[in-house]
Length: 233
Length: 233
DNA sequence: AGAAATTTGTTCGTATGTATA
DNA sequence: TTATACATACGAACAAATTTC
Image (cartoon, each protein chain N blue to C red):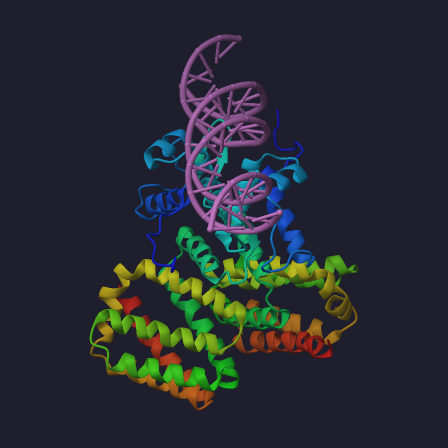
């Protein structure tokens, strides 16, 4: 017998997710507000408390809700971190290629540069300049890596586009999982290479001076340089 | 008292996620392969079966694993759909703005165009052409919307960049949740507007003829047109 | 301040349907 | 067909933290 055309009875835990999503989207449930108790939800949805918990765990893991023992479940106020973790786990699990990742980063940073020259705050301009200084005088691999990442992240944040920022954060997490591979190739190369330093200088100068042309040129040099290492691989 | 510096005892369900992630990343567990039974996992990790289930549910929801009653849990072979749902739920819940969304789509499609003129397969060229035809002769709002989406999705897929494709798929889902709002404004406007039709024609022509300049021009006209509706809002 | 009630955290037990040999 | 292993789902119990009175 075919078992495909049966009525698809959604699994109980999905009821919870849909219910909460609906409440949030309808504005009925706002950030910071408390959800009904697990037992009450179970009764409302006609499922067991265990199933309710499975659904709530998923929401918690995505960063939509957070729970405190003894208190209850709440709609999250700031759920960047768990969201980033979930996103990056998804990307990582899919096992996508590094070339695609680099290409995608390039794309996002280019867009960010377009926006950053218009929207970067004074504070962000100062910050990205500081990251550049730190990067140039860094002495250990780890320092270089961290200031490099911080510099690029500041560029992205200066775009003030939430999708851009969120997506890039997740990519950064994915890169971390590649580090054992990347480091030996790219970071080591960064050590004594003037080209990369110049690229970073131009990139930052573009943001600070709202000079799109210079910023994009720096970005291009930066990724052209990285691309070399791909070709050697 | 500060409660930040306590030993962070990971919640039981996180042990499951980390365990599976580790097994997948180490190559010890490959797509299609079966996980240990829930009871066995519970014993291995020293937690209860219910906690194991919570962790597995999260992985299932992200599309990393799938389970069949009676058989067991397996590493997914193709987990695009659940992954997309999770991604879009995250985006939706974060409640990001529509302007940011449009800006981000523009960015992704521009990059896709750059790649598509080089990498689009013959089949994809035929497909995107067909979507254009269908779009031009569509009569209902729903038809127009669906062919429009399919056309843009084909462009993205022609880029052959997994990150681009995955991210855009999620965005498409987010858009669906905006439809009640969008439809009255944009789709209605599409009905009798030649500018948008021309934009789509140029866009497709660019992909089919590997003509980057034309493709980008079509893309720009397309999004410039959409931008109008933002300003009116 | 303290006790009681409420709520989540975690586990165990059990009944049921499904897949597989 | 039968037997076994397994996931599914529910219910109950106790621990731990919080809130409330």
